[in-house]
Image 1 (cartoon, rainbow, N blue to C red):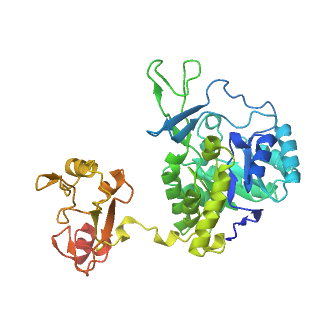
Image 2 (cartoon, one colour; image 1 turned 90 degrees about the vertical axis):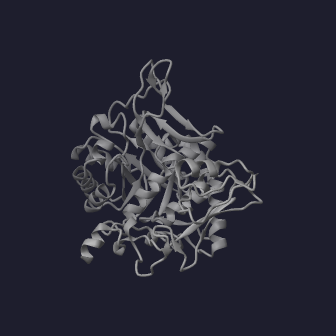
Image 3 (cartoon, rainbow, N blue to C red; image 1 turned 45 degrees about the horizontal axis):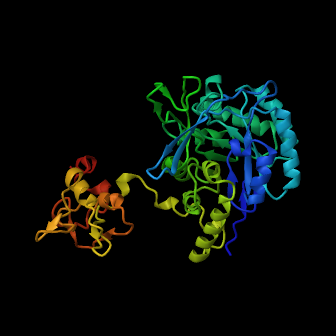
Length: 437
């Protein structure tokens, strides 16, 4: 069997599946259940500074987006960091680590952006025997208004400063959790690296309002007639998270920086996609809150079976394998041509491919042939956009087939010109034309 043992910046766990800092990791009871179910590690729900704990709302804390079958696509939460006493959390963390020495236990921390605040809490966390700390620079609601969370994560200079403090005052590995609520994710990642971070984790939740109650005219979740923005997570944010992980993995200034991937991971395949795009392990939250802790067993077996089938011996064989194939648009091969093909045996004659192509694309799919309802792709009109594949309700009924060299170029109506390998040299590129002139 494939070896799923994980060594992330020196933190060892039996598999790469960690629970992210969130309600499922708020107390020993939950974490013990998670470890019994098979999770390789947890990031304890974010700890605050010594003193009165934060106060969460007692009304609804979650909003949701569902698909047509009521499958959960996304969560919005307005919950803050732990509302339990700091020392209660620390005692429980110490006991859990003693009970489960082979599992990773990471302390998520969020305190004011002041050196003394970080200096004070780090020895307390270190005494628990925790394997590392995660700096919560991502929370977009509640705490950010207090100058913490995303308010720090959106300022690279603050990130570098706090990371330096933490590296100065603790021996534990430092993982810097980044906010997606920023224009260019590479800049905070570079700042964290400059500060000496051992790794970054991303993404944290996305600032959002998921819906509005049209009877009360207030955002959901509604608390006493009012609502607020919250943090969005779940399967819907996975594409955003994958892109941001890849951006850091392929950035020359952060290349080699360990990444813990977070964002919408629900299946083993989701996890594998994060790993091949450069993540050293993954963190999961919404899937556990939707299906329970035992979902990790399917993730473990699925990832192991896939790796066995592909001949991958361990996680090092797959980590980052897709990064070289992520490129900027201008380097894509414009000579590559593919056309849609419809499997008539699988086609249920619903007509969705025809109507979307007719109304919104390139009028490349017939509706009738000799008076009979029949859908077929007209190669001369098809530009290979893949829209019909995306909307077809029957899996693999419509596929994209690559055309051989010498095929007609849909842009010009002429045979593909081998002299134009990519956009950087294509005559339709104004910069290329200017250079040629």
